[in-house]
Image (cartoon, rainbow, N blue to C red; front, side, top):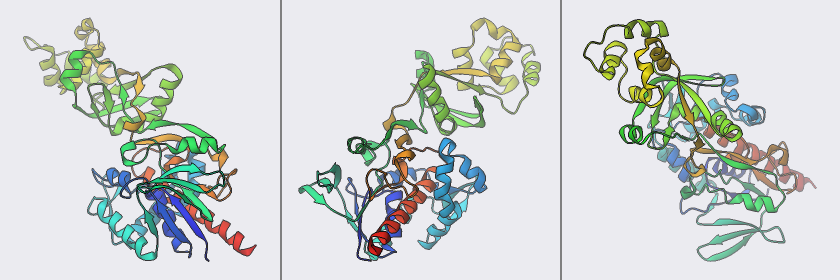
Length: 406
């Protein structure tokens, strides 16, 4: 096969597409706007690269919410187990953590990325760095801005793997939206996903508890209920437990202007137990000391009680226990898109065929986070990005085979 393909975007989806295509004899050129590849991928592994998750496939697929049926098609062809086997082929062993998340043994992204890029380079993939895509020329050729000036590129097929709109400094800036809009492609507005939220703290609380972790708490919002931890910031809340519920919280704020989460600050204790313990005479002890001595509540948890509970209710142990078990915290806005871990929105599935080719731009495919899906952290984002790259590449191969046969 003497066909050529251009991939725009050197993250997990784009690189996986390159690997599939080069393996089928397609000439592959990868273009990326940054001076090096996989920058957001490297950032994702800063605290330990969470590649995927070990839970049963049916539960894994359910994590993709409204778009689970679309994402499942990609994952059936490249499962979480396939991803682990693929990493093994690069010399990277993986293990399952206590939470069920899957990590490389060394926990870092860089050894995997180096081995991968080396294999792609040796296979013949050509990389073009600091090439920022600027849309199409009138003759449908691709237009790039480079350090040497503007370049025009042609190919038999194109895969766009340009990421979402978060972390612009790493190249994922959503600039591609305008080029697809101009081409008549339906794109859902990019929104923050796996993000923190603003809370209108009092100045005292904000100054006193900025950066403090809230551990061993359970968060409830609508049908969401999970135990975990998150962090109080000077402007609001962020962290794994908040991110897990962020999609529904964000949508509620969009619809109603705010969203109230409920926090159980003593999830392993029944309310009746708290009432019994708090009913003990506190003598000369302060209320903060009494809470710590009787029910183990201290620090930021006590601060939250003072922040949201009427002062006069502290004398009523039943109301105090109720607040400990059901602390309402009003969230008023999602943190900005560029501060989010990932983004929702993007190229809609109605604009794509089953091979992830744009219906109104024959030969142009899309993959990765720029598609209109979202998932929580936990390896779900990366797994689907890898799998979508393979799906788009398979679509390119079908198209090129059809052209060759004709």
